[in-house]
Length: 296
Length: 284
Image 1 (cartoon, chains in turn orange, red):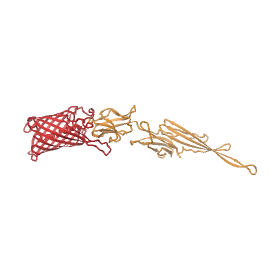
Image 2: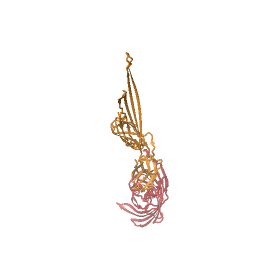
Image 3: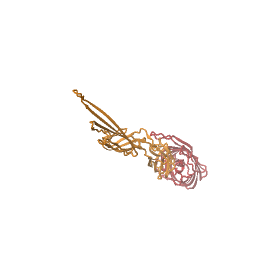
Image 4: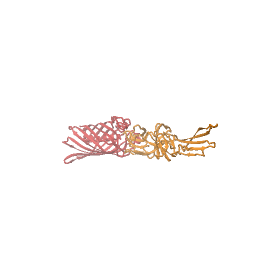
């Protein structure tokens, strides 16, 4: 049995609220380093450095992902070692040690739980002999004593680095395993996008922009100073849309009143940065697109 | 843009009406016409002179036109249009939002003109005219102000007209040319207007066939644009070259019927669509 890890990931929206039951996709590199199921439960199958990547396809069809790398050992998680000691009194002691590691990367911090189980089996054999011809009786009695020791260590680090240390009887067995998590498995949407508005018509329309949250936490479409639009189009409107060729289901920002230079549109709190994929410039009287830009 | 287009088409179809009239009327004579023209356009020339699509819009104009000689050298001209601007309901199967249908009906801009004969020789005549474009139309029609039947500004068009007659292979022809300047108000750019027309009567003078070429060039000196009009009007700086033809059939010596067709060859800020016209005229 190889080293086992339980990975979890949370998908946070831009307001910092985790999204319930995100449809996570787990992948492993190299593929033969680990096996991982849909729930993020991984089992090491080969020694070496492994990378776990978790991805999510957003409602808008965009794939965002995060990954973490760490060394794995094929046989670490369960360690069973037996030591037999004979005491001076003739008592034999057998010690079994079981080590199970679990990594929980469900939040921005990582939690490592190290459970060590030490089983001490004590076999006490005493022999007595009873001689029927005399007064000696002989009998064999086996006494078995089990001692179970469970040690749990939980360590949380801001950097996501976790260390598991298992220490056993220094006279017999000592083992140390140190899995390292390089990055937290936390997936969040970007806070701003930059792009360029381009004409899709014969009318002049060009300029770069930044779309994101300002210092006050408001979502703003900032049009840069290199923006230029034809002044031959009264009735030109700007939209946010999820269809590059349609205003269906779009959000109408408003009529274009600035045709040259920097300006900005502040969006209401009901609009999230990930709600719309495209900026559209639409000539409303003629119901045709004049220009657009892909936000993400 | 649309409003400008209306004005242009008015001009051209006034020309059609003029086609069967005398160069200038003699005193007490006249020419009167009940006419109509319409077009539907799903594309237009942009400000760069290229073609872009648009929601199909239609314009239907019914008009009264008359010219009457108050002296042998002075003719009064009037043009009264009644205009319908419409757009049919748009429905898309692709999920694109359509637009409800809409129409505006109103009087358009009325033109009043006076023509003065300057010189008359056996083979040619020279005249001038002053046309006043009265802003009697609706320049804010429709839900978004784009269904306009007038531009809301006062046009003053001063023209010089030259006409001549000639023969080719014993067949009589006439030709007319004009150069005019349209002084426009309310921030519109002024314009140069050029016109040429030639025609001949055929089939025992029962038909008059003519072709016409008109051009409008902008001075680009107007301040009006989308930037300062709040979207209530369409673009300024319209240019176009239009080619048309017309057939007139003389029902009697006084009554005639006409059918015309014209199409823009190039342009800026104007619809790209053929226009059809027809009318009944009476010659006094």
